[in-house]
Image (cartoon, rainbow, N blue to C red; front, top):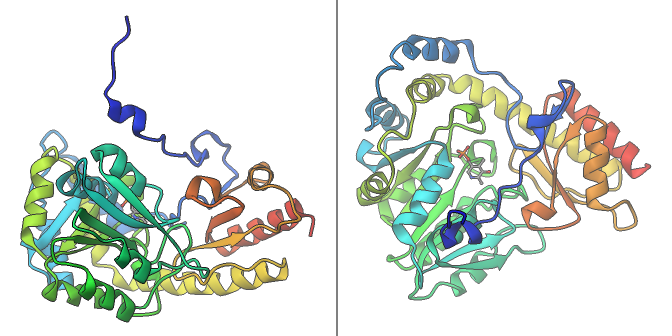
Length: 362
Ligand SMILES: *Cc1c(COP(=O)(O)O)cnc(C)c1O
């Protein structure tokens, strides 16, 4: 006799790993939308300053970090939730809002973690196809909202397609969604978006208690290895709910300290965004030279279709890996025949372009 597992295990897909863990040193990692920068020396010192307390549990209320975020965004600390990465808050949102019979609406392709909410809760997922420009079709999403809908997720900028919608379209959508439905705006890449001031969406919280802005220290802040994210919420009851259903000590002592310190260095964030915008322009033109048409990126990565007369996606991914470049194939991201490529350093980007030209025989 073997142990019996719950049905939840069966219906939960395995997360597709990038394969980076098993590879040699001289490899460029462009598969996980990380920034190439090591943590700032000040952040490392902040971690060193607290790691000696590791025999104690972390502050379960994350008070200092929530206060720092409250000062930064002018949102009361009672309306700020912390998570072990924003995926922790995403899954917690599923747990507090969804159950069998309930529905969650999201665009597709979007973040590969969203389908886990259905698997974890037994709710029904309604996937609304992106438009031809690889953007959310908000009108089509609105039409899918019913009395059964508890949660609608909008990923802006969208992973894996890199596109963003302007804030006025998001605003119109938020105004049209019924008040009983929680709107989760996943803004993991918002700092890279140059269409609007990344902080402008925060104002929507004042008028929309059903809105949650999901943000993270994993992307532009470059701390994904520490696992810390946050949610700015329209209603403090959302914070209370996600805190109630999780284990109490989800955010570690070094993660809290690093996040507080990282927030103080907005000049570095601005530099990273500038560098990303340069990479965006350079990568687009290099891809165009290869006859490829990336979607209009507002993120730190690009998304494009492979040529129909060229090698298969799996062979391109393999060929790039053999040349020391790790990227994501579209199949695991919801659309076969595409690639998602994170911008690296200028040298990484050149190496990717050279490897791709070689693999495509161009
Ligand atoms: C990377 C990412 C996240 C953040 O994940 P963390 O758990 O904070 O590391 C959230 N949403 C999207 C769309 C992402 O791409």
